[in-house]
Figure 1: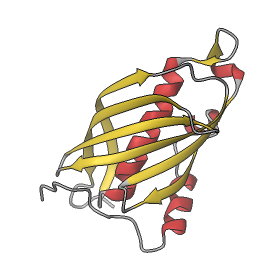
Figure 2: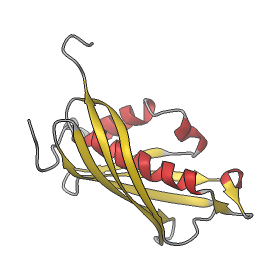
Figure 3: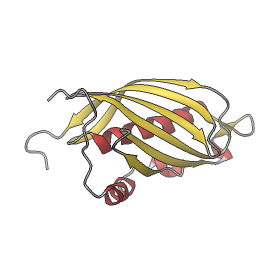
Length: 153
């Protein structure tokens, strides 16, 4: 099935699905105090919240770019998990990040959007905002959408 538009794949009860995603989140998200906050099927997006301490900064309080990238990548990947039925993994093939202004230690929300999904490839975009709504970074990614093989439990 080659889809040209995002497919709604999460359960009818979004809150239960979000709780399940957070319970199964990768351990690295704990380092960034990250969790899924919302899924918007109409916008084909997933919002994640993060709180970044100075431990992940250089130049006193500027978040190192790899951590900015990780927040954006997590939001984009979680959008795919939430919106594409039957995937078991999202493997980033390439990612481009634009750093629009310094991201300083503090609270952030990242919005990952599923722009298009095919049978094995997804195209996503992401935006990182400060707690007060300033856009500090954007990203686009192409990812392999891994599906369960027949017979896998």
